[in-house]
Image (cartoon, rainbow over all chains, first blue to last red):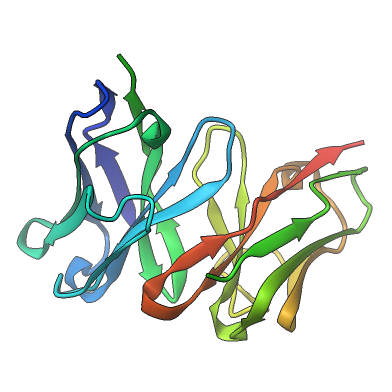
Amino acid sequence: EVQLVESGGGLVQPGGSLRLSCAASGFTFSSYSMNWVRQAPGKGLEWVSYISSSGGTTYHADSVEGRFTISRDNAKNSLYLHMSSLRAEDTAIYYCARAFGNFDYWGQGTLVTVSS
Amino acid sequence: EIVLTQSPGTLSLSPGERATLSCRASQSVTSSYLAWYQQKPGQAPRLLISGASTRATGIPDRFSGSGSGTDFTLTISRLEPEDFAVYYCQQYGYSHQYTFGQGTKLEIK
């Protein structure tokens, strides 16, 4: 059974940093590209970042470019999102999602709150 | 950047009725890269349809997708109580830039 479990969310002050993790199981992690998607409270879905199966190619949404970095450790079946210079508008549930064309499996999400 | 506009914003129907949800793109979308997701309160989104018309594993056949170019449709033939949720369309573009529509809330009338 495919499982994606996010962790690392919490309360952080504006300008602060946080690292999210996503532990994958039930599939060959190194064969799939992965993504982070976020959802602000009561709002819709926003794609954040993409990473290829090898980790050699990454893309980020314009809204986070230069502040967020996606990475992965295929030996540990783990996906990461390094977030810095956080702003109030980054407050959201962050989901990791497996990419097979579109996003066929999602984790349950981890909440990031940016507030003083 | 391709913008996806979903309509209506909210759709009020009764169980047993047919639901038709629309997703319009600001420019042509490759059908292979158009998907639909369902999200219930407190849950992660779930993939329903990929490639504009292919149901994902385990999705009942009352869900169907159609369309091409800039106009896509998700149809639920006969609504079940568990179908009331928010639905999003999504497209995948150049440089893995994914965009979502703003969502359609399907509520019980």
